[in-house]
Amino acid sequence: MIRIDGKLYDRAYFDQASERIAAQIGLSGHDSGRYAVCFTDTTQWLSFFFAIRKAGASVLPIHPGTPYPAARRLAMTANCDRLFYNSLTAEVLDVREEAPAPGRLLHMSSGTTGAAKCIARPWDEIDREVESYVATFREPQDMTPVIACPTTHSYGLICGILVALKRGQVPVIVETANPKYLLKVLRETDRPLLYSSPAILHTLSRLLPEGERLYAAMTSGTLLPDPWFTQIRARSDRLFQQYGCSESGCIAINPDVRAAADMGFILPHLRASTGTSAEDAGEIVVKAEGGSLIHTRDLGYRRKDGMLVFLSRMDDMINVSGLNVYPGDVEDAVMAMPAITDAVAFRKADRFAGERVALLYSAGLPVTPNDVREWCSRHLASHQLPMEMIEVAEIPRQGNGKISRRDVAARHAAGEFGTPAAGVAS
Image 1 (cartoon, rainbow, N blue to C red):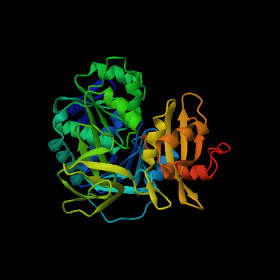
Image 2 (tube, rainbow, N blue to C red):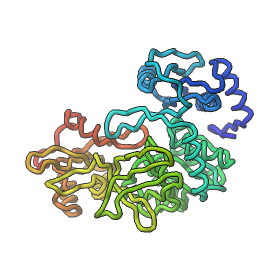
Image 3 (cartoon, rainbow, N blue to C red):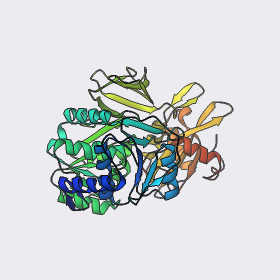
């Protein structure tokens, strides 16, 4: 059973809806089709998903807010032969011929370090991830998953819905982004475990009345800035964190988060290699049994207790005259400044140092770049100091709450954020 915006749908409902869809679009056992699906109605989307999964075909879930031209481009990029866009009538796409292959869950990489590409994960690999997740992460066994993130994304679909169904739980899906309504749902739910984005968790932690706390929350997708982490941790009885990548799914889970960078313990169906300490950091590389090596392009290390610690995206690290600067360190320092609400540090070319740090920030009260510079000079080493500081109304984040520093740097180079105040560049 699944509860969607207050209405309960049992297994019989989805079985019947999936059978109707399969009959109408011609799905049959061992179907080798690649179907792109975009529905604004979550119930219809999930009925479609279960039908395609049962037939052993491949599906590309597309976020319900995607305009038709963009949805069509995604479907073509993923080499889907049919697109269902808010309709059971398919648009047949002209794509390259491929040999029949086992069914797969298709999704696009985040694109935070370059152009998004299609990732295809076989259904048996998804099943292994779900089994490993459930067997290892036992703390939520008696909780009710509340999924306040897109069910077209692996986080909501696999770790939220499929894991809950495997546990025999009834997941609660909340489609609105209204934080006050989400708090209402959490108050009405028995032992709720909230699956959501860091930005939503931060908003909820600020809205909670004094003395009220989140029963349990899961964060994923991006490293929480220290000020956000401190506030969310203080307002949550239980805080969990999971870490993964597009190619492998969930890699590690932390059942009791005490530091934002502590991603968790590696799931048993995977093997991982990385550095052994902060001074001996290395790329996080994972491998499933019988699979190939997956290079995450994330820099981190494992402590002696097995905890996987994240330091930075390798592509985000800034080399200033031979000294490494992790953008998260700069952002944490800036966001500890009163009135600063958000910040992103990114790489900028410099003819003397090779690379230097640039910074965008937003603030709830007037804060000049010189104010920020003076603050940074007291909290950061000289090579970490931003050479440019630009105030913006809002930090550009992607739909899933992540920041693409590559995109921010490109938009900055194109002059989109204006010019830094005089005397701020160094």
